[in-house]
Image (cartoon, rainbow, N blue to C red; front, side, top):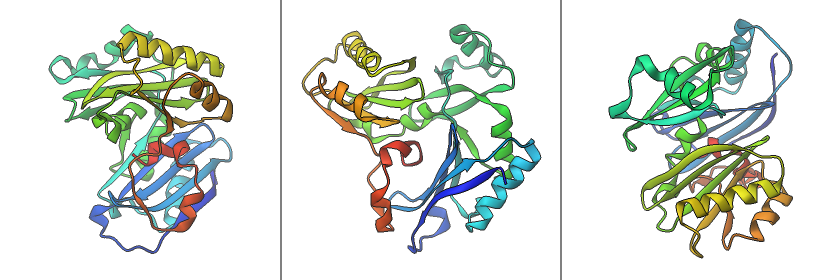
Length: 273
């Protein structure tokens, strides 16, 4: 098997399939997944990558892992694959042209790496399309294993978070290995959506301060939300400067199993928005 199930928590709550969503998020060492409705978190799991495999074997192993848990793609309202990307941008619907989708990203980042593709995820609410680059082999393996799966980026998910409607300016920092994804929103509007390289907690602090000053939202009511790979050093460094720092754990849901309370849900927020 290409993957080994490392964590799995489920519940006995019975809800109709048309209310359930399966959300899978690629991670550096494998993937995490959740089954949820708007009201309940029903299932959570984490699978670790065990070794290299060709696309056919990979897709077969992904399908077999989910089947072993009784998870089938036809049993959900929606199945999505979230792929954190280092190369992404929003393009308004009125400016988007399918033939130019690679050009938009080339202008910002240069050519995409070999073995990658440009994916598009439209947002009706923002009247824009999220364009992002992802490694095509892994995405294709999931598409074969789970027909009908929708491919999304981290910013596609952030645009659906409840932070977008925050009455106070809200800065979301999603920390990954050597990268931080930032979305800034206020009163239903997205003010910024971008990624930065960083090496230390001091770098993150500098980035956060620059963002606040650039957008002129350096106020006591501004809330900094942290998610992802947030260590104690990062949390402390940002708390020393920002008046309000909180961990973001996604949308509020009831837990179908008390074991969910032991999860560090801020680390898996892309499964939980």
